[in-house]
Image (cartoon, rainbow, N blue to C red; front, side, top):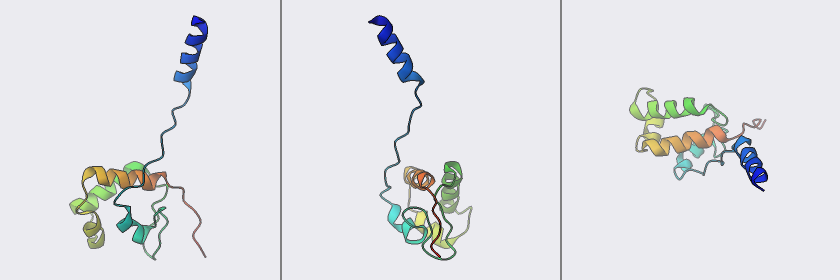
Length: 103
């Protein structure tokens, strides 16, 4: 019995840990108006965010909020958000799967 328990524990610890998908951010609505809820742009000129690297998105959002990237519409959109809200948005969009744009 002890060997079986030890083997079960070893197997459980060696299994890959699957991260839970991110929860849809409460502040997604304003972003989704241009970038789409799934990160695929809805308007010309807005970049697709789906599948972008988490660290890149997180840093870009902080730069827009802090004015280091001077895009007025982005500064207005993310200016009132705190660090946790920006992180949730970055996590959400980085976890989305890019899809082909509609013709």
